[in-house]
Length: 158
Image 1 (cartoon, rainbow, N blue to C red):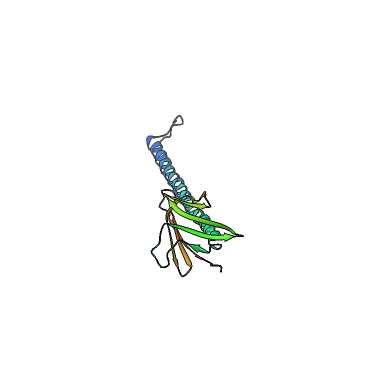
Image 2: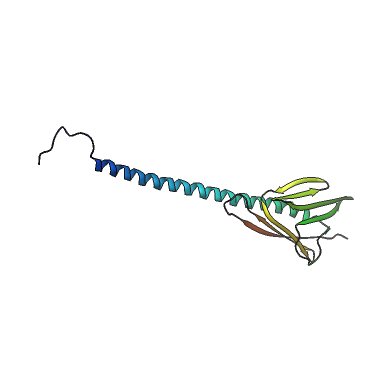
């Protein structure tokens, strides 16, 4: 068999093989990039949910440790809003927490503050001066949901 020195170009089989390998490598890289993006979005939703709950918990804890009374009924079913009352240096204070849509709103002496933006549930209950707060956050559409329970003692002052 004699090889031609003038032979140029690629055979059809070589071109098809190169295209197949390129398509396979591109598919693997594309899948990896999609998975990285998907995991990143899920991680961001998890961080957002935990941050949201921690922010709400901090506000409730700060008001709860000063509270002398609440509007919650002892040993009743949980409700979606709560009012805490206390007096500081002769000045009465109230802080009301209400779940409005996905937001937990704090109304302190008439001034409203959004303390959580992505809540899917918030309920408040009291038993023997121990307030139990269940907060559930579900930001985004990735199916991430986090739930945290806080307990705060109401400290009546005589």
